[in-house]
Length: 262
Image 1 (cartoon, helix red, strand yellow):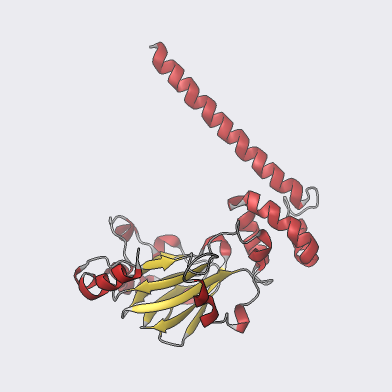
Image 2 (cartoon, one colour):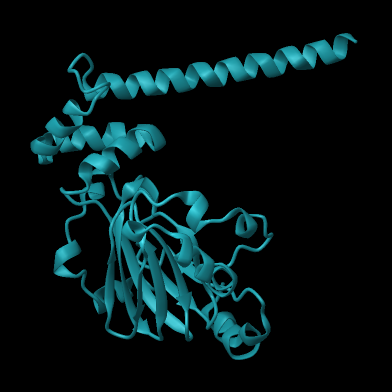
């Protein structure tokens, strides 16, 4: 999507759109991109500069950095950031309304069935038609945090927190997910099953550059009883996945043969 096309949409179509287009540009800082110099226009806040996923390799790591452009009424529906990562979000222009629920809050509470049943589960619908009832029914210890961020504001979203965002104005922001030493155990537990091959590469690098984290990964292997190394556990996960895939293939082939034999 060209920027001039999106600018035209902001001026003309966004106000009429029931579900305004929200642009997440994950490639703006990549090598060879005309927008790469934008990386020189901001610095990562000092609190969030640790970036352990860099050791998995820039080419292989999951998407982690976005330039966000969204018209008024666009937004991100209720979610938890992937792989137990944390994130920071800095607003350059416009205002964003945030609602965050602490870890342990039931998914069925923050994403009620009546909302999930809708074809378009947009953030604005959640705020308009569901939030009031959700807020009234949530237990006291899980009451949400609500805030509005504006130009120059940066918010930290810890891993495991449910959150949703509504753009109150036409907005521009930059955001990045990251892994710190503090969050490494939770991210490793998620990554080793969700991104097993990536985790194998990551573990090899951590053994050299961060032996302390490598040892944590070893302690978390298997049932944590020391019978499996982290490397063995990763290979076991891959072998089990391969076996399930092969079993599924055989069943599919069998059903196909049975169908032709009738």
